[in-house]
Image (cartoon, rainbow, N blue to C red; front, side, top):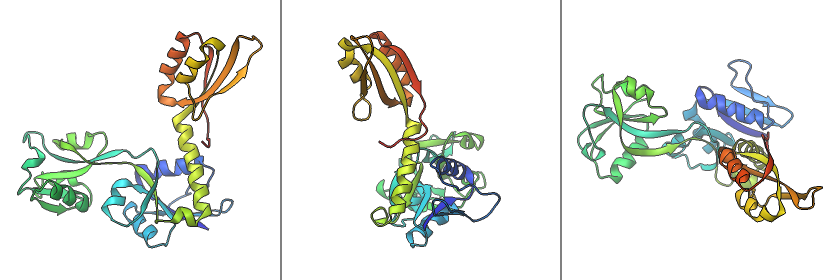
Length: 282
């Protein structure tokens, strides 16, 4: 039986459950239970603290886990990133008081509070900066006000929390992170069920990325429209009752649909229709 670890709280937990349910698995908790068994698919889902997931998966207790890329690298658990999941996007950044106008190269001798001691230490070493790391677990942004640190390194999404604390980002991000599916090296070669799970998840991710576009056009502009809508490999082309016309169908990037419709319309395509897809395999 495939065993998968999911975050037990926070935004990652909500999005992870939504994604997995869309892929056809039963993983919704009724309350605060630690595990949910999907009997139909023979998958057991465990709901764990995000920081513990890498440990359970790397020790072979569980097969796969959904965690942030930041945790994967920070904990040095020796896991592989199997696929990125398209949610939980954030940046690990340095931040300090808005009125100090510091640059990262001026951190020598300062105290840097963070929950990501490995990532921050590695970044400072790379820059040859001698700063003191102050390990904290949560609410890092108040450490400067409380006199524990001079600078912080923390995850930033909207930046609202930093603004409320009177802080601003310093320099470029240390790391761009998002939710990922992680597993032990070789797990995809050894577990058929793990491969099926990943394929189903990828189907939902593709469906969120692509839409189906259909339209009619003159045969004389077929080469041009195929450049606009090449599809994954090639578009589907079918004859219409009018001998000079064809119907074209292709997958296109959801984010590009308006521009694509504009471009098709300019060269005479008609009946342009966009359709959402629930899942797909490409």
